[in-house]
Length: 164
Image (tube, rainbow, N blue to C red; front, top):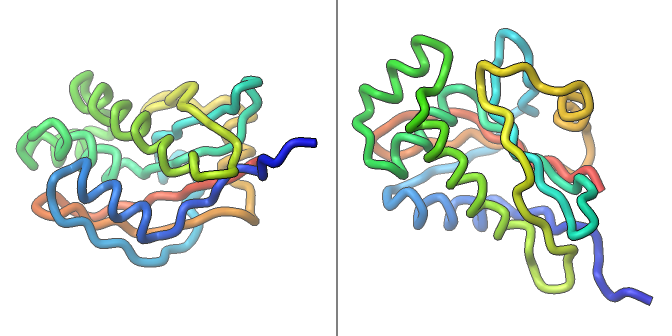
């Protein structure tokens, strides 16, 4: 009999602390409506799996937060993030930087007694989401939806969705 529980759903404080430390700037979070990826609301979606490669969680960030987080971690000036938002797509630098943010964010799920998860894939803004990822991103239930203000950059939205 296993003593592991399902995936850990991080609370707002855990997310804020991780982003504040990772981006090395003040980060404010507040509750938000669920973030649903649509053509009018493009999102980057990180897919997290357990040791058996079963999808356990997703983190979705809207275009503004994708750009601001990718810029902040790499010390890219705010103008670079604003240009990406205006163009509706992240350049290679912002994509790589956001990948690192999402990779490190796997630690949010790895609490004592919870299933170990890791980042498996990232579907960036501008690329179509596979239907199974889209369906999971729209799942209601065990999720946290928040507005994230990255100090010196701007505000976007983030959703954490547990699917297992």
